[in-house]
Image 1 (cartoon, one colour):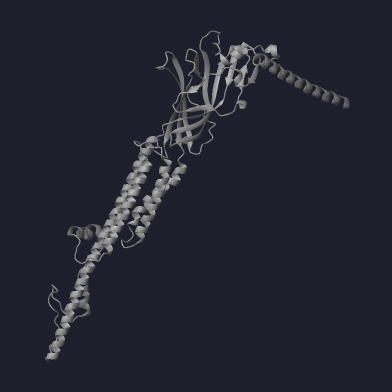
Image 2 (spheres, one colour):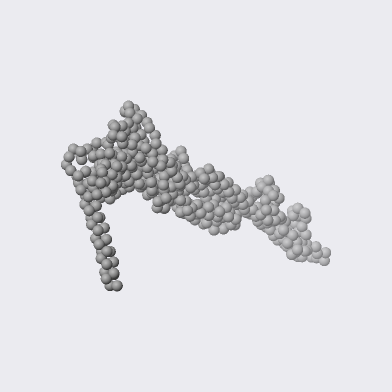
Length: 469
């Protein structure tokens, strides 16, 4: 029993030893291949770096390079200066027969990885003006995979910063379309032929979910063009990115606050005209609107003059409405508090107050003779004519003496003076009441106009957003 166990352990150890030896031999064979093929100081080794490889059939035709971009990640979208920064995998595949070998000569080694500085690489540059395209990693992090048949696969991580015409009209629900144009300035199409591998939609599944932007779609197309400087045709690759802004953050810091201000503003004009709370509330709304206006301008400094953001127009309109509300509040407060003595409300406005608008606002009827009615109830022995112009008459048929007549005359004079003062006071109160009602009328009209204008403004804003969607 023990003997069988010892045999099994010995067989296992022997297998491990043989595998390790084979792996070691294979590593040694790879090192020998790299040394003989790439590290020897010969003209052939140097030409691998400096000279463009011939075509797959060995002729001097164009070198076919398969190019594609994958795993695009958005790092930054500069609204102010109109730049976008992304990183991506630039996948290039081509065949260089000079790099091929026979696997049997190297113990079955059919694939190696070496630094890219050992071989020739396609010279891909950026065509987009004021743009940068560089490596996102150092030399030690990059490798080239070479197969025994000379097939080369090079997938560096590139970092690109290029211009993008940012359109902020529909901020924060805007969609930006950006283009990155790359190609070779060194080799024309007869020397370097870029073949699209998986041309069309780009794989963006590796998106790191940028805070503000999401790649909605991406597309790669190939074009050929003859430039004025040269006779040959140069081929370029256009990478199109469609970015959608994530509006949730801006919805809570811009849309909801400005909508809240627009909802509160009309109801300020339902506060009594003489109340100081009205102007205080309007002043607070003005301060809040100015602060949000400054925050929005800081966010949208890069907008074009001929394409002003709709949200900025809403903020400007809101600011104008608040200032108008403050002016109206000050005017109505003046109308309601000033002591009016002679200037009466125009007749047509009195009709509106009493007939049309009075029913809506529950003003009630205007009665100018109420004080006189109460005076008659309090002093039944005093009689007034219909025009209130004659002096009061005290009926006392039994008074026959002169002192009684004098006393009656004094009472009549006092009552006449009192009635005149009450009449003037009643007229003043009536004037003040009419102008107070005019102030309320102006406030209510302003409130209704603000409500209607706010509804129309946001309806138009929503209709414009539907065009983007």
